[in-house]
Amino acid sequence: MTLKTRNRLLKFFLLASLCVVALSLATFIISVLSHRIIEPPAFRIPAFLDKQPLTKNSFTALMLSFLILLLYVPFCFYFLLKFFENTQTTEIIFFTGFLLACLAECARFITICLGLWLSFTNILIIAGDIVLFGRTLAPLSFLCAAILSDTDQRQDIERNYIILIMASLVFAVAIPMNTARITSTGLVTEGFMILINIMRFFLLLTAVVSFFINGVRKNSMEHKSLAYSAGGLLLSYSILVSTDSFLFLVLGTSGLIAGTYIYLTTLHKMYMWS
Image 1: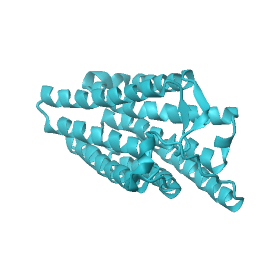
Image 2 (image 1 turned 180 degrees about the horizontal axis):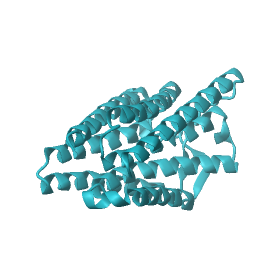
Image 3 (image 1 turned 180 degrees about the vertical axis):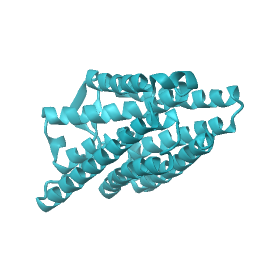
Image 4 (image 1 turned 120 degrees about the horizontal axis):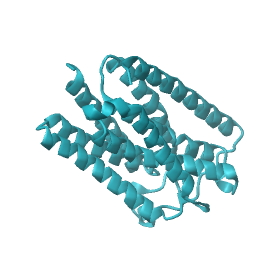
């Protein structure tokens, strides 16, 4: 993929993310004015969180977490265009997959705004599939960045990226949704939820270990820094998309910002002279 093609792709993603943000905010305003927003049920995973003062369920914290994600995605696309416009790095392409994963949470936001979680419609199932697609895509994007960014893989970046998207999509569609059980974050729970969460954890762990192995193999402190920042970034993302209290909101937001800054600045230092 040439720099010109990649920058066009980033511009398209920036425009698309701004459109999604505008649509989400318009939906929110209309829902507020028409009193259609209904707070999701207080079904929390794990349930003991409500017994702790710092993790009490808060609908306000949940809605603020959506706002942070809505602002985070277009800002990151703008940052990539501004600071990586002339930098040839494969990792940036896969990082866009992570940003798309963050944007997928808008499906959950619209579900809450329109009160769709009270229904058993196909739209609710599709919303659940979109969220599952994003939460599968996020760790897979970093795993691909760790194992498919060597020089000999750069000629196949388009193919690898399409495989990444399709694998996440097929997995999301194949997993059944339990529309009868909605969490306090407006999430339609998946079938085999425990197994899926274990799979996500191992994908995260594999991505971090792969970055670290690259650092040891290449004797590169930058790759080791990528391992730490990618791990922190994915962990913070997991906290933020599961936020239903102000403690999780603060932890997820601060970790997401710090992890993104370290990850992207490390990539910039690695490739700025290439």
